[in-house]
Length: 251
Length: 264
Image (cartoon, rainbow over all chains, first blue to last red; front, side, top):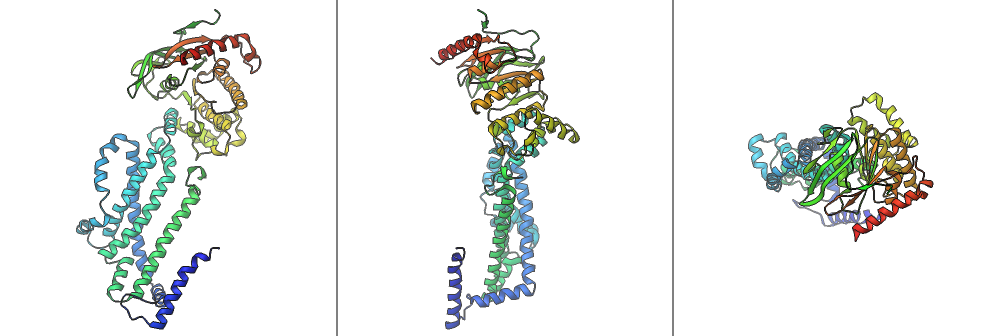
């Protein structure tokens, strides 16, 4: 009975619409569902949605790949080398808890407004979860498997590409999926806070220009994009590693 | 006494030798003054109570751990790292096989490590799988194979190294009795065909006598060689007649009493 899940949200929407029809809304911060849908259609039709979504997604994805990739790379290096891992333990512990949005003023001085600012902050935010989960993934590899690679005489590169990465891959991908959600959150946050581009900025702009229906329409789109991104990565994860996320199903 | 029992054993022109090997791990004395020699194409079985350092002996031979004092010598050289022609069969096959590679892929891993050209690999993989009777299962993943088949696959991967020495760490401990007997005979055949020396660690006293040319009994805390039993049983061994041989039963009695003593 899948339709049951839709009863409450649809019911609430209908009630909101009926109330708006009966009592009328003349508010700077509220809009009726139909007004929001209309605004959403206009945004879609005139191409402005495509533009702002493109700006936000480009920043989020670029930051995700740069920061996430660097995080996974560092995780592999630190995971393989225990000495290096000990050496960097405290710097990592000190830098990791910094809320990524707090470094906005610094990066603003370096990059000014625009893509580079946003990508840099997203990259910073995505670096840490990938590093931490990646390290855990590599230290969680079955020690027996590493001994197999030693006894067989695999060299350093072979050990990394043939044993360590495939063994850790399901958890590395999980790290990547979590980082993707973070990337979208941080990108929109940077736009709301400072950066004059993308969905976050348009959202604030609509609010400032007292157009609540546009504001809610953009909010709706942000939700859809976030949901879609996660669904896409979840699907990829299932296809690659099976429902349990184990490597056995990877074939 | 027919079977000599002595503390140290000397072999002419040994392939492998422990010379006064002592090892500590985490402050605990694991092995103390081990002296052993192993000849070419000799089958040595090691028995002893848990914690007597059986597996550690094997890991020393494999070059996975290095002794604190003394040395392990292979073909006249001190062992400092794993050698390409010493193969190790791990106790837990489910952890030693790569679950994301097929049976053929797992065997191929050994050839890749040996830098065998890509074109030669499929034929050699097929030959190795055939040797252990897995030619029908080349495309299957380890999780799709039974325990006995997985252990066979591990043996095939080790044979890819074309080893002079096969180190086996309780390889059949987790298998049912029938499968174990079949695999015991297969290992004997493989060792004979390749003139491979085998260093076989086991809990099972009968298995040790059935397979070995010599059975080495260890005593724990710290691990040291207690006794060496020479096994004078005719080859090829037979699961029925060998086990009914009076000499087999005599050795079984000796070993059994010995293990009882170490537990007391």
